[in-house]
Length: 275
Ligand code: PMP
Image (cartoon, rainbow, N blue to C red; front, top):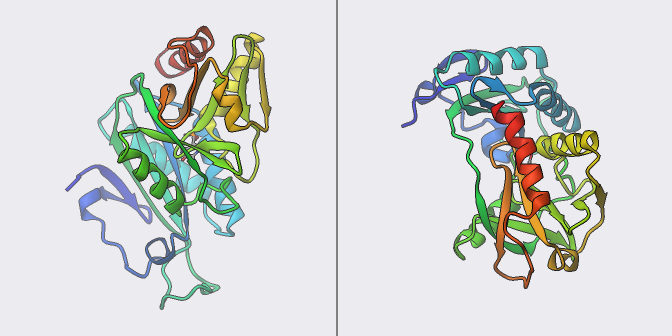
């Protein structure tokens, strides 16, 4: 069993020492939200953005929590875990009910859980599969209810893929655990934010840096056919960084490996993580 440094309801211990109630709503209903906060060479990446998204996720499902306390716990996990690269997984559930019931008790107290995992950030090449987006209509909330993603990502895994590109009625949404970018020779494209996609922190960092550098990008509504014509495509996330798509198994594409626009984005993100 993993003995990572962890915290449960404010109490620090090792992951294997935490005992949770089976009536936790995280367990019975996935009535919980989460964050993954990366740190690389002892530098925390976009800490404030992750905390602010966690606060927004809690607000969206009406969980009240002390976000200052959560921030301190995340910092404690990172600062005292003994690793210089990794990520913190932090989850906030609505709490523990006296009985399992869809309608929760009014006075229920939020339940918090976090642990830190050592992780080395490395460039990745991805083989992906396009699939139907099976998920609910509030994918902008970082909920732990991820069954749609899990079903799709595991059918991709059985085809030898590392990730999926999801679409709703032909409109591209996002990856199973990442945001989608693609480019031609002039411009970078990414699906615009909506309730169908998670506002990725890595996506946001990349767009801000592209703006600063005057590199052209567009956020919009894109179709599978747009991807078919792309010269380059990549996925972004806190643990993947900027990861190039080298093959889409169920789409004829013309992707050029190491396209200059992908390389530029990859350099931008390397600088953020490693400098
Ligand atoms: N979309 C989904 C569905 C995800 O699970 C993730 C990873 N948490 C992302 C996008 C990328 O978000 P971020 O860049 O904040 O890690």
